Length: 316
Image 1 (spheres, one colour):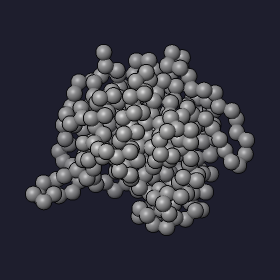
Image 2 (cartoon, one colour):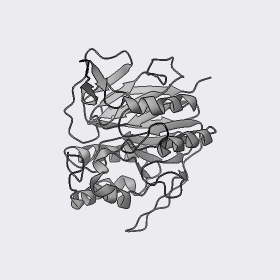
Image 3 (cartoon, one colour):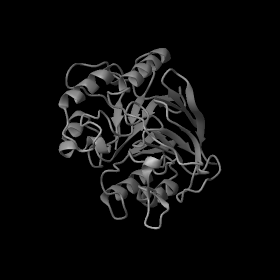
């Protein structure tokens, strides 16, 4: 478990002030996944730079949360040999933001080339924690506790990762807000996440994630998850561990923000399930403000149009 700090191997950077407390100005975070350089990672990054400047520049945002699939240096095929120059290009692209805003990366399937070597070397997360290096770790952004997990490693009952998450969330009960991020979604109505089962009905590809980790979200009052992988934007109504919609202020709000630059070629389940609140196939990302009473998330498309705007509140 770590608190956010900033290191850089190439050149000195401005010192970063600690994130504000929940009683001072709202925390501000960028949230997205599936970024990359092409086709539109450059465009979303340019718009985020404008957001940062409009908010006051360095120090105006407190963290970037990236839910996996960082640079796509291995192309669109998971495990394909990486082109290291793409990692370099990605680093230059994000540097105007990452130089002053902690850039926190969750692992995705497109980081797995050469046993995740480039990802581990370039984006060293959780160095001071008790998790598993870049794969599962936690950090605090002011009053927000973030548990970052790996959908690419075992997470089922009896796994070290699940045991670590239970201990991490138990220790974070004093945090005002708890967010879990993992690359593959707990739930989604994007058909790319479904297959036809033996009996001819649709089955969700990663139902095991919700089956194993969902009870921990409920037990330890995790208010929101951030996921990626399916190149789309989708927010769910608050749900319990079984995926049943529950009243606002209870349950967990799952948000898929996987539209930050990688190719979008998705199709939706029709009609939308009752648990799906908002879904969109435009490129973009999300901004979040956190204060003592709510998480306020605004998802925006390229060009600035608002895709979604919602609040997550705490239960009584």
